[in-house]
Image 1 (cartoon, rainbow, N blue to C red):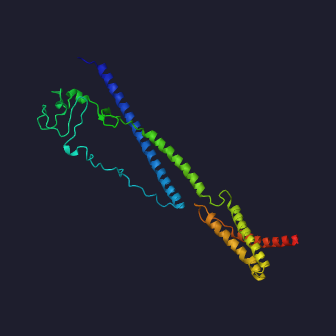
Image 2: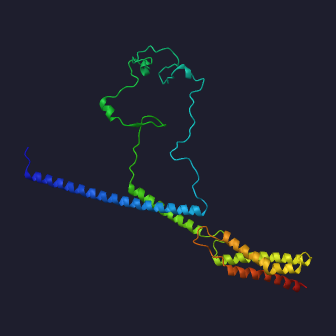
Length: 304
């Protein structure tokens, strides 16, 4: 058969187009792989930074290490099979399962049906009425090659194994990126919560300090009233009452407010030491207690 020059030229053009298409496809695939590798590296950096930040949050709330768990890769413990029960004929020899139309007996005499000749079990050929039938019929060579792979499952044997669906790396990376964004959002919320103290978290530091020192001063004022009543019945002398009113109880209220702010007024995560407004606390405590005593005196005189 003679091939003309035009046919050779058309074939050459077709091969050239196929080669260019293959090169273009290879270049596109290489660029896609580079983009995927870059996305994987960026996602790995994000996950590493998130891990470090979670470690910081864990140390801030008092969790240094994760709770102990089973070592990875260890199989689940299952009860060992100790064999058949004592009354199931375990010592009577191998048990042969009998199906429809087949007869079997454990511990019976040797089979008289023609077998394989090697002293093994006769299989289905040893069943009555099934002479000449092999235990495991063999498929022809062509059918054996075309036989589908099968997977043994609890539902039934002979079910064709399901082929695993192809995983698109682009879709998986997009899902991982969305999960990382969600983790960042929850991490930011956790950081905002960690930057709030346990005591009056929605208040400003100044308002919190004023409330704490004022509360401690009011408690000290109640103690002042108790001392005044004790002085009225002769349990406390005038010098002791004046010392507690002018110095003792105001100092106790001031240091009490200072300790409360240091214990419950400090956020779990904060850079440096939060302000405790010592001059303001000193002024409040040393004014509230004498004012409470003065208010008591005015109240007593007014009632008289």
